[in-house]
Image (cartoon, rainbow, N blue to C red):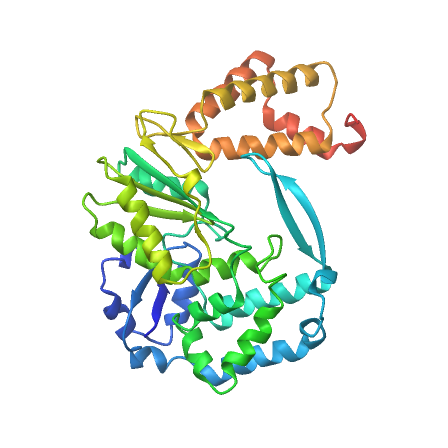
Length: 388
């Protein structure tokens, strides 16, 4: 009774799920890898796994790869006090307060990267198409574009409480037992034990630490059945509701107003039936329309159905441009860290609303008769000339 997820090219999206599986050829997995770069997937629940799919996997070989990993890193697995393998610190949250980060030492980090690679390439572990965080080729903007394409006007924002910290090995194993091909490997003799051993490296104090290369990947994988259930329930809802998830942030929207309390309760019920160890943080629930301050994932989808960084950020960006040009005209150079921060911010703003940001940049370039790109390049290529 597995959930089967495959990568799909958008131009083939109209094919039925079974048509795709029944048409498996030797080039299937190559096409999967190419399509995976796009981030688009389709998930289906089946009582029985199609034989055409089973015939293309060597489950014993997959298990042996996992066992070899365990043997290679047995000394780490046997470390009684896993906290000795981490460096812990806190960083400020954008919403206030502090977020604890547990960064693994170099040896453990290498092992967890290897485990991530095994899950993604040997087991072909994917994500539900509603997931957008920690996925190559996807960003917060791509998540918001899903709602923009739906012409959504009403938005329900939900947050999971302690998403990483409350996730346990038992829950991950429960989820993997329903997700192909992990489900088939777990059935093999010694399969369950091998997974538990390998996963023990990824957990600290009973939960998933934030700060490892493996934690984000395993959350997207374990959420496939839950994302699938929520997306299905929202498609069947009247009015239709669009669903996306970015890590622990859930966004549900529609072009028509809806009874958000009923939708929230539906999500809570799905989590309850999935025996999820995390829940909705009710006090952070927000519902409103695009006519108001509709901020989600750091950007606004406004009443004109346009994605924007907002007027306040534009004013700050203009001030930064003025300071950059003014300092440069006086022979003053920003420090490398400051110019890198500016360059990253500018690239992000251009990604969100290119035309408007480009006009702002061009107005300052016309005033000062020098390209911003030239200032950035000059500063970064001449460290000796940078201000402290």
